[in-house]
Image 1 (cartoon, rainbow, N blue to C red):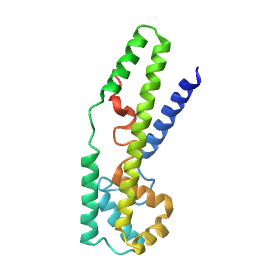
Image 2 (spheres, rainbow, N blue to C red; image 1 turned 60 degrees about the vertical axis):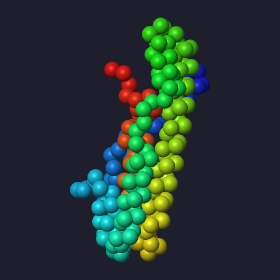
Image 3 (cartoon, rainbow, N blue to C red; image 1 turned 180 degrees about the vertical axis):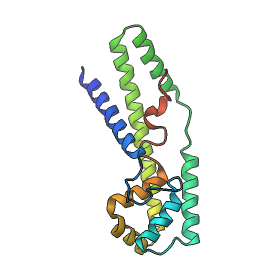
Image 4 (spheres, rainbow, N blue to C red; image 1 turned 90 degrees about the horizontal axis):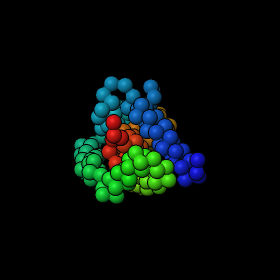
Length: 179
């Protein structure tokens, strides 16, 4: 196995592990675990209550709702690009014609595009989580950090952006694998 193939395989396995872990949601006892997991604002309100912090003001809740709506609108799933479709087609054709070198080259192209898309998604998720954290008062953030520690506060914020790989998981820019 060539070095680039090994790197691509390790990248895919690593991303699958991160996605599977994040898709499980927060562990019991973390903010946002349990009933009502679907609504991150409700989870935040409950976490603030559990931490003994001030409730969200109407202005904070509206600001968070606007941030979340803008994030969802800007990050709606898009159709695969021409480069992704071309790479997937080359990959399939190479496999069906028995061309291992062609399949490796196409796989490297697909992995590079998936990596770039994953980085962009992670950057956008980080931006949203930082913006939401910025809507909270210093006292609210301190109470949440004291109650749930760094890991719990991160899980709570991550609920707004979805799992690190987005809701599409490992499908990436090329869509679901052909079956």
